[in-house]
Length: 280
Image 1 (cartoon, rainbow, N blue to C red):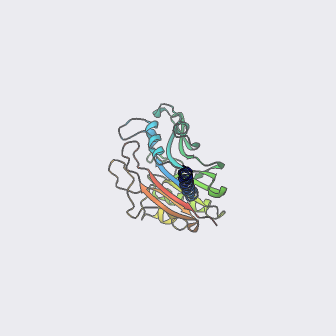
Image 2 (cartoon, helix red, strand yellow):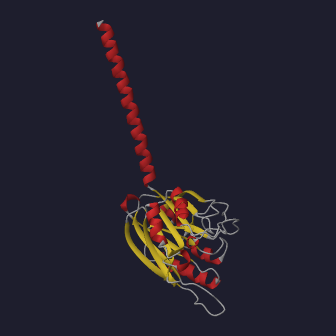
Image 3 (cartoon, helix red, strand yellow):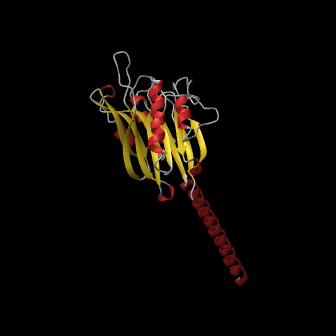
């Protein structure tokens, strides 16, 4: 009887030790994954076509679902309406913030139909600073309709609690010289005065081999997939005009980059990238 009793005790103790070891290993694995993920930044760039999908419907909730599926840390939005008549006076930036649970900052570039139109940034990272930077553009004439251009620059607390700068921008759609001037301005404003790690995302309205992109590549690295997958128009994409760039190159590593096959919510497909910020 006594031998049997001690045998049962030994068996229960052994099981206890094994359960404890398994629990420890599980926690160790979880912590390791957390450390690995702590240095990565999930980035989305999306021209949302002022909320209008390719079916003609204005549906901000549909856009929010596309954004949420990527679980982003930073989102660069272009063509955002705030209080504009065509999109039923909806504050699209604020609405997307509410639906995604991300903080938002809006960078207007012009008045339009009683409201504002421009770029925006959504982020789950703590915001340290915000700036709106106008970009050069050709003013409209009776024969040429153009739009003011700009960039919204949001500095956040990134991995290691260090500042990380994130820029959302949109280059001119119908004047090549404007796109060239805007690319040069981006390089001038955001590459010469600071070595802070920076991610630039936007609709550049230029293909990878065209001059505006080549100008940017003098100072930035393009987080683009090897096939340079087209992003517009979203139903049958022919042109790659939406991008995620970063600098300095030595501070980042591209873990993943792709164009999301979403043909309905906007006339552009979103670009997604996972970047690892290298710690010193």
